[in-house]
Length: 226
Image (cartoon, rainbow, N blue to C red; front, side, top):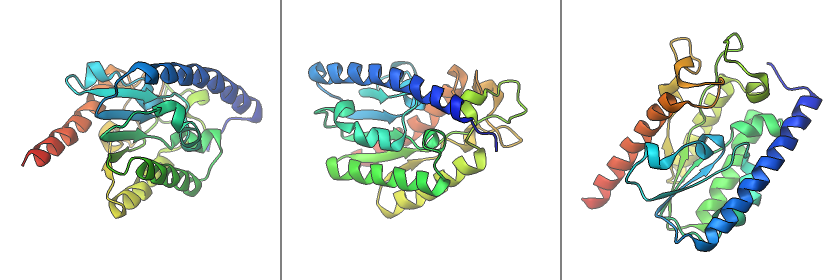
């Protein structure tokens, strides 16, 4: 497996500390004035870069994503991220960065996610909580491969995280949305047409990402109205 060396990892961590601190302060201020919304999207860069107005128009939702976030980070900063918001639905994408920034094993990453999901369940017992699966990365042979973003994570690990979290979600009556498979190419890697840097999604990728979420939202709304 390709991994970041100690200096590269230190640099990445420092960069994320700076960017996440700014984002936390932004959310803290927003939470003082925003009245809230029934839907909140929480998590890492997959959420921060997910323009809800563009890809989920008509859904009353707030974005509380933080690029570089790990499960422990969200857990420890939950008060700042969500403040006094009382969402009815929480969609969370997290776990991939645990493999890199905490150098976690797959099992440790899964445990981190479970702890966070349990805390969300305890804090928001009336909310419907849905885990958004990790998404794939491109092959190391791809021209789009960027070590600083991708090294330390492999698709078989990301897929195992999804499988283990789904088991937990099913046992605990939590939602789970598989976004991983729809983004793959024929060789089992992130389709290069869906990304600009080998891991983050471009508009075409987010169209696929959003379409799957919209289908789940549609079925949920239909079920609740019956």
